[in-house]
Amino acid sequence: MTPTFGLIIIGDEIMSGKRQDKHMPKVIELMTARGLSLGWTEYVGDSPERITATLKRAFASADVVFSCGGIGATPDDHTRQCAAKALGVPLALHPEAKRLIQERMQDTAKEQGVPYEPDRPDNVHRLNMGVFPEGAAIIRNPYNKIPGFSCSGAGGGAVHFVPGFPVMAWPMIESVLDSQYSAHFRRNAYIEKSVIVLGAMEATLTPLMESIEAAHPGVKVFSLPSVDHPQWGRHIELGVKGEPADAERAYLDLRQGLKAFPLEYGPELVR
Image (spheres, rainbow, N blue to C red):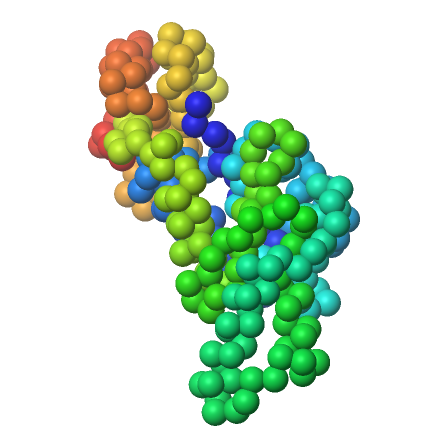
């Protein structure tokens, strides 16, 4: 069975509006390219209690979850500690993470033309970025070697933790998808077929939508209303999405059912 995929985005900067979230659209793009879909997204600020509660739910589920943000080593980064608390395990310096972080510090010293001093207080502090919940696995970071980490949950799923920076997070998410979940990839896994229904009311069309879903298990019927579209004015985009063959049959039944209503139509859409 293909797992449900979830996304957690952590940071006060998102909740306050100082930064606009770019992760969700990109994760949807990465998943769609692999025939997968995003089942849910949660946003949470830098509150350790809320982060821990959110991660507890994720670990208790069977979902595959990506968590973006808060894995650094500054006072407002709580994700590593909250993950350990949610799992009920101690934190420990991961040996591979230690090696990678030290490599990064050596590279930085070389670029700056200064000697590498592993015992310097700031370099010792940087090792905190490799302190993960006990039993965590490494997610390699191609941008600067500072790794993320993955933890398995009691519900059978996993949470994969990556930085908040898109330039790091997106390649890391992509690598996790390709290395761990390729068995679930499906090209042309589903389609959407819809029609623009002009001047209709959703309440009028609801019984038809319910009957189509009941007659076609696995197909979702959707309606997206708009009141001020520049071209079509007040309208509903009414359609179905699912496996190509199933969606085609459901769409034919939907169009047949619409004949009972005195409606006007705009274009048909296929995605």
